[in-house]
Amino acid sequence: MSHEATTQREQDLATLNAGGFTGWWDEHGQPAPFPDDFFDPDSQWRPSSNDTPPELADREQPF
Image 1: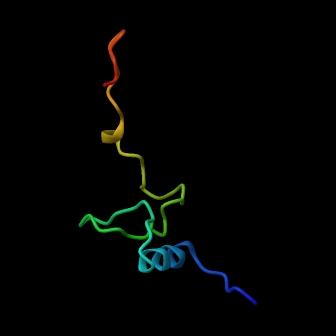
Image 2: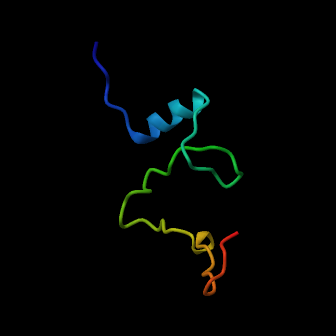
């Protein structure tokens, strides 16, 4: 049995078609494959600063 090499995008699309989850959403909030250039260090993808939790004050409980 031979397996053809696939790209990450092709694997993501197959996962989505099978009802799986890639961990990425498009601009409409729908599950989507990762962008082709996501892991390219020269791309413009950067972590969102909105996901950074606020700093806790001394002795402040997180919940």
